[in-house]
Image 1: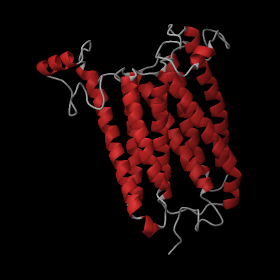
Image 2: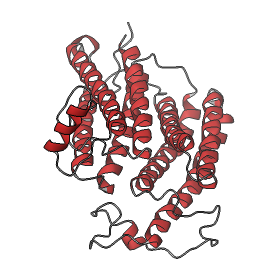
Image 3: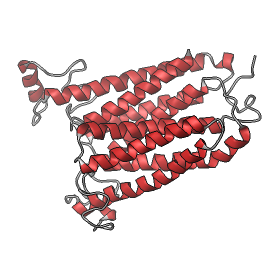
Image 4: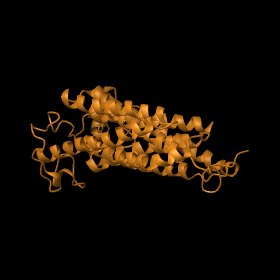
Length: 340
């Protein structure tokens, strides 16, 4: 039962990530100028003319865009539902800790993470899409998905896999997960700075393999959207540096993750995971290229975010598979109760 609920929560986390990407790409992140309500309303958004008039009086300088507001509130309702589900999982885990002899560390960490996500969501609005906050919010969503996937796997029965082969795969699997996590964070920085089309051509950038770039302003963390730390407009060379770095990261990720996929295909008991990883990797690379060539169509841009989330979940499954195989799967420190 607990495993089923954990999988539902992981699926909902995936939906929240995808809808969040859609809201961001539709420029609806500031569809509601306040938080957690929308123009002071917690249920629905100002729709009728009198409601819009009152909202615009309460928030001077703001014009109610009902369509953008609905998209933003739909995302908030989904995220709130996920938060409640994670809290329920944690409460259940604490109640059954004596029966299972498991310390509910992971569910408790998830509750803290959800609380941080809620705070970052609020700051995303109140700080007007500051890139550092938006990127942290994106990374936090991915981390939530990863931990919920791990929790769901942990609630299942351990599989009998070749221990010696699993041990050989562990360093590569961990490295691939780390590289992918860095690339996802870098992709979040691209998205939060609206730098996806900073290089209009592919594979070069403005016709050069090494275009003019400004890394100092590109990766200065404490600054406003579209501005340097000094308050000047962010130069195009800085946006090019962000996009170029993401492309280089994509090459490194493809090599490391592709190598892991091939290794899995050649290892008994891991071929299915290797095939899954190759398919997801190829799809993600193709989506990244298509987004540049076709000028970031909404469907492909959202799919690129979804592909990153699926790749992350697949890496969590792979790491769980290679690390859960042990000569002593039960006992102190294993996180599992003894059989019987």
